Image 1 (cartoon, one colour):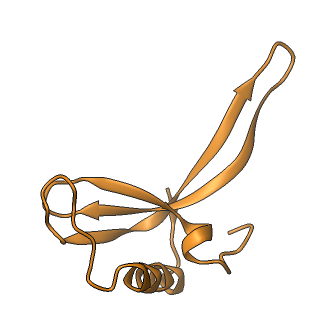
Image 2: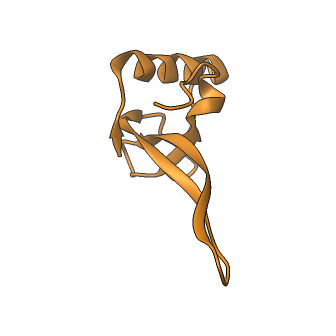
Length: 88
């Protein structure tokens, strides 16, 4: 996990509020008690062949966690924040 800058965390929260102005319901417990984690998670595509081992594009994500039951979602930061820096 890489620490998120405060300004980007606020942009993520603003984007989520634009997407769902009345809030998101947790599909596990039906709560609307979510928290944005204070870090980015980087997912990348990995591949291996007979001669090459490596990884493909990276997907910076932010975790949103239900504070009632722990259900977690990872949202693509580049979709939520189109101006997200290519190399954060």
